[in-house]
Length: 133
Image 1: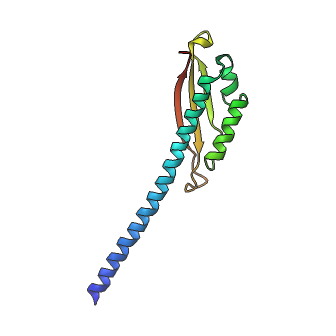
Image 2: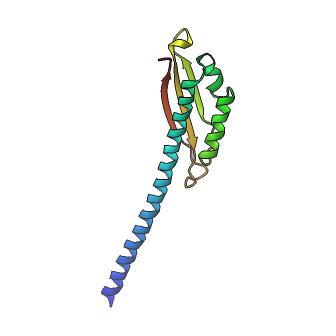
Image 3: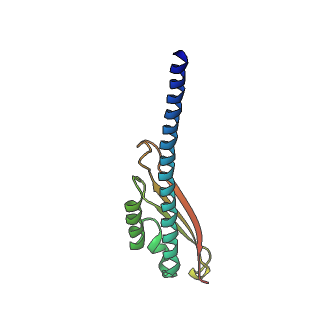
């Protein structure tokens, strides 16, 4: 009888472990989805920079600047959960003229639903050079 109780206890602990493992796997899947979404959004804004006017690139896309930046913030807030920080875009001209290109740094922030409200936001940063071919 005692051996049967011990066997039931061991099986119950194993099942609890599997349930915890499954819950953690689902949480990691959600977090990877948000990370890939952040990568897509950063790549998307950089591709928009490639097709925009180089003379107004910093004025349009730098943090707190023009309409393309505010549109990007709106899309990020719609597609990524719970961020308390707006995305940042740093646009630095490489040389004396816009024809020499720009170094761009895009950082996107989000907070997955599984993270406590006091925790810092997760972030994804992408760097690129935007210039004429």
